[in-house]
Structures are given as C-alpha cells and as structure tokens.
Length: 396
Ligand code: MG
Image 1 (tube, rainbow, N blue to C red):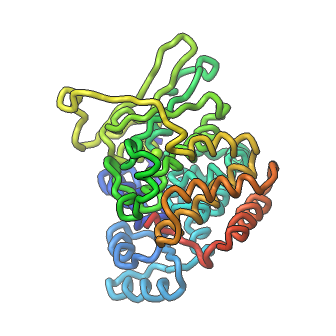
Image 2 (cartoon, rainbow, N blue to C red; image 1 turned 90 degrees about the vertical axis):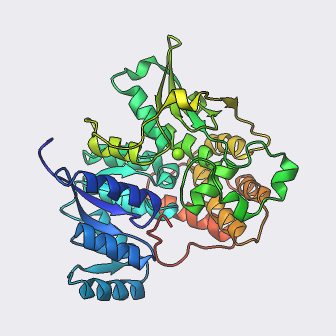
Image 3 (cartoon, rainbow, N blue to C red; image 1 turned 135 degrees about the horizontal axis):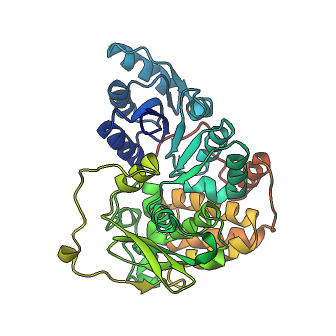
C-alpha cells in the first residue's frame, strides 16, 4: 500500500482546508494524486488548482461559473469537464478513480456528498463537522456497511485519534477537547452584546473560513465538536469535556482510567492533521516550522464558562433530545451566523436563536438521510430561511 498512489477527490478546494490539503499533496507527488476537485465561486483559484493538479473532473457552485471555468481551462489548454451544483458535488464525491474523499465544505451541504462517498466505499477524511453533527449515526453505519473509514481532519479530533492510537477503548475515561476560547475569551456578556462581525472574524490563533471563525467566537464550534467526537469515537457525550487553552498548542487530550492523560501537541497548522489523515497509519516527513516549547514558555488552561458561552450548555440540551436536537442546533446556528454576518442580529442572538429553536422542536431519532434533511429543512423554514439553491462547495 505504501507504494500505491492514493487518489483523492477534494470538495472545498478553494477554502483554507482545501488549500492546505493541496499543499500536502504537492509535497508528495509520488504518494498522492488529485482526481477530482470541487470548489465554490472562486473560479480563478480553481482554475489555478486544476492547472497545477490536473484532475479529471472539476465542480463549482453555479452553472454560469461552470461555463466560465470551462472557458478559462480551455484557454489554458486544459480539457477538463466542469459540473455545477449538487450534481457536481456528488460527481466529485463518487468519482470512480478516487480512493478517498477530502470533505472540506462548510455547513450542512457537506452531508449528501459525504454519504454518497461512503456508499461508494470510499474513505472520507472529514473536515465538514456539520455532516457528523447532523448524521453521525447514519455516516458510521454507511462506513461500516461499505467497508469505508471516516478519518478526522479537525485538529482536536485528529489529536484524540492520535492519543487513542494503540489503546483499548475500555481504558478511556474521557475525551478532553481544547478550545482557544476565540477573540472574546475574556469579554463580559455586556461587551459581547456589542461585538461586530468584523471583530468576530479575527481569530487569535487559527486562520479559517468565516463560518468556523464566528463559530469559534461563540464557542459553537466546540459545541459542534463535542457531537462530532461523540460519533467519531463512539463515546457518550457526557464523557467529553471542553478545556480552554488559549495558545492552541495542545490540540486535545484523552484521560485514561488509570489517571494518565495523553495529548497531542503541535503548532496550530491544519497541514498537520491533514497529513496525519492522508498518511495514516504512517507519518509523513513534513518540513514545516517545528514546535519549540522552550520558546513558547508556558501553556495555560482554564475551565470553559457556559454562562458567557451558552453554546456549551445548548449542546448538552440538544444531545439530550437526540438526533433532532443536534440537527436543529446546527441548522439554527448556520442561519443565525449568516444573519449576524449580515448585521441583522447581534452576537449574543446567535445562541439565543439556537435556544429558541430547541424550545420549539420535539425529540426525534432518524434513520435515513431523507428524514435528516427534512428535519434540517423544517428548522430553516421555521427561521424563515430555507437552504440556498445550489450547493456551496467552498470552504470560503
Ligand atoms: Mg477544530
């Protein structure tokens, strides 16, 4: 296997995880090949990526974008089919040559392609946490039925995967997800009430797309990651905790029944977890800046405060309601983040929107993708905002 070239389909190519994935692929041309690429609206980035990696298929969000990209590729002497919308995303996800899908889209739109890839027996390296939040049980079942694996790309989940390596699951007492705390870690509720989207979009440690950056500021990102970890590692959510760690060096920890705690450390660079997932079970030789603990000097840890960051309490409530709770939390948050970015609601109203939706819906469990998508649709409609037409393939 070490000699075979791993063929990769990538969705979310023009976003930050997509770019980091291509950086790793470019470093190891003898090991990895990009066979299909999907991105959003940034046609010039996609054109450059297609020219560099020569995939057999490219997908974009809009039909006009597809025509324009095909024209730009032709101008570069490339004859690559360009598809659009959800049809394009599914074609990338199920591209026959691919061994693995890197799922790096943002939001609920990532769910259908992830399901389709697993159904086609492909491993999925998952950065799109929303799909695991909405449909963790379904994705795990599809993976098991089709002999496929779901590999974590999220830095916290990669850290836990690494800290669990070689250990029996019976020895695990709890998982501890670290959180940087975002830009408003020390803000009072009063200060948070006045926060603008521009302030929330400045993350102190990680360079990420806007949706996840806002989620980090509200700590909804960590709430979603609790659900993601619950399904990825099949551990009850009451054994998953959050620890605030502003330096983002310790990426997460596993506490064992004997009291030992194992952690994974590294500089905050998404290329590390991506390389771990692409290389597993081997590690890749990466020539990147190295962690220097003596230079960093100190690592701080604080308990998470779910009064100032109600997302952390809301996720416990949502989990208590089962599948419909997790889907509603995710959908309401996506709608609220869009509204906050559009200056339609205040920062604290993001969590308030989610809380109001959880008050209204009833607890349900779902078996099928259709039921899950229907619940997602219902929540968005209740908030007066249906899912946008077309599929946003980008990580922005
Ligand atoms: Mg993360």
